Amino acid sequence: MSIDRRSGCPINLSLEVFGDRWSLIILRDMIFGGRRHFREMLNGSIEGIASNILADRLKRLMELGMLTKADDPSHKQKAIYSLTEMAITLVPILAHLGAWGRVWLPVSDELSIRAELLEKGGQPMWDKFMDELRHEHLGMPLDTMSGPSVHATLQAAYEAVVASKALAASPAA
Amino acid sequence: MSIDRRSGCPINLSLEVFGDRWSLIILRDMIFGGRRHFREMLNGSIEGIASNILADRLKRLMELGMLTKADDPSHKQKAIYSLTEMAITLVPILAHLGAWGRVWLPVSDELSIRAELLEKGGQPMWDKFMDELRHEHLGMPLDTMSGPSVHATLQAAYEAVVASKALAASPAA
DNA sequence: TGCAACCGATTGCAAAATGCAATCAGTATT
DNA sequence: AATACTGATTGCATTTTGCAATCGGTTGCA
Image (cartoon, rainbow over all chains, first blue to last red; front, side, top):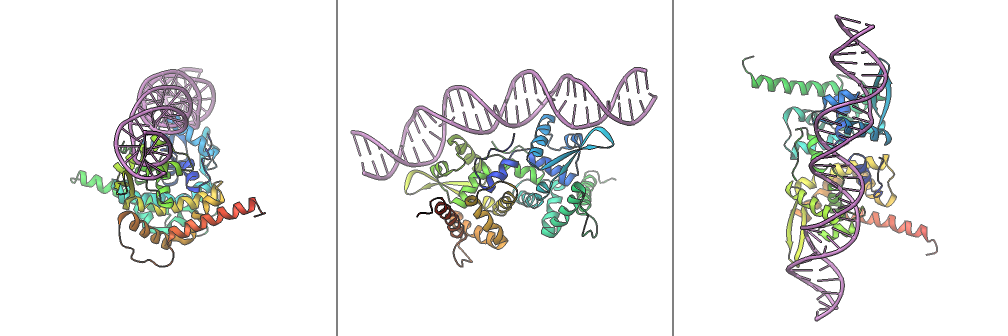
């Protein structure tokens, strides 16, 4: 369940942590989609993850120190998953990955608008976003909160693209 | 053999290209280790890739447009694998991946010195390195060649660490 | 109090991917 | 002529994945 340690190369070890088809997708949904509960991740997954795979990866990511789990006070059976600092610092990697994918792969408009904004925003935007995530997941104070949150900005941009696409599909509206 | 297209999300599509345990390792060896031939990759692999997996991934990476294959004029049976621009632009991602791994995972000194230098060098060093790779793999002219190559710098630093480790192991030398 | 909907999973099973060892035919070296 | 090296391929056992059904417990509502 934990990593293999095929070699001490940082790229290899990173791959052993999230070099599979689901781990980074789950983290992406938590980071950009704000998902915190099992069912939220399961039903909201656009790639259609299976429940056993989700359960397995959540367990694995916890063992690796990328996530923590806590009881939801509002519901005795509900668990809240939180990102650790280790996972939050993946933001620059996800930003670069999105930027690369946008250039070379057949991405869709509505799903790549976030990557586009994140690329344009650069390191300052990533820093601000990581700060927001530390606030939401680790309870840290927001030291430099100015203007709308990165999360809200990305979400609004996504929804704007979806709306404009819907308009284009039915111009009578 | 080609990608699934589970969704048009750039992060998902990127993962479908190299979200497995070997593709990025092969590209890493080509980019940082200068490997161009099948046997070179097979025997030089510190993670110990199997020949059938290597053959499969080389084929897949070619289909995806990340690699090209050409005859080696010096040996009728030898093939030379080259990186495409698509693969060369992974350098910043590999640099970030290495930097992240160095912070959070149990990396070894000799295998992480390259990642450390690459992180310190930042975007200017990455740009210079990508320029060198375009020269070696795509035959492009080197427009801003000043000082020792990034490849040589990384290699020298790696060998220095290996040498200092060997010295520490047998101080009588 | 009943009962359907929802909670985070778990189980069984088929299919696919992986890892390993042996092997291949053609080419170069000696 | 013998040997080693080239980029692979094959067969096979093991492991991982994906899918569907299901689990025991919790919650909200009638």
